Image: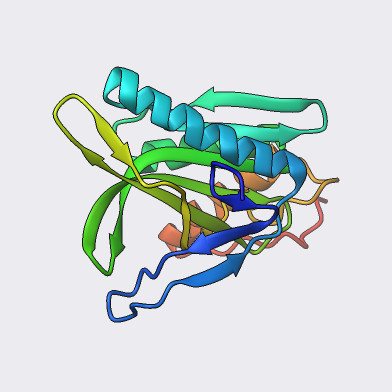
Length: 193
């Protein structure tokens, strides 16, 4: 096991159900690029917290050309998630890691944590990983590793496939949502006259 807590594609899992005291091993199928991005996301997040006392949420994109990093300053989580969705729709990377300062509910109670969400294009869900920490007087004490704390919906636009433009899919998704709010239906099989 390396110092980041990943043993090849296996991460230690921490119970998020406060009624469960047993920890379980959770196997994550990570690409090499995804694993590297995840390790850097946790390392960079720890560094930001230790040096700046805060961090701006950021995404590491795994692309065929390497890695790209984008910050997501926002007023609230919705702004951050919308920024990530737009980025994913524009770039359509093979995988992404979104890192932010959050918290996890463990058997011992709620703890501050660096949280990373990661998914590959085409996966049904994103894996949630967290590294709890405690704030001390001018210092941070990080858990020795990070843990699997569940799953979430991935942030790729629905229906995105390698041959479909992610921005087109995102726009169609937004149009469906606005029409649904008005009680209208969108018929994609209609042909122009």
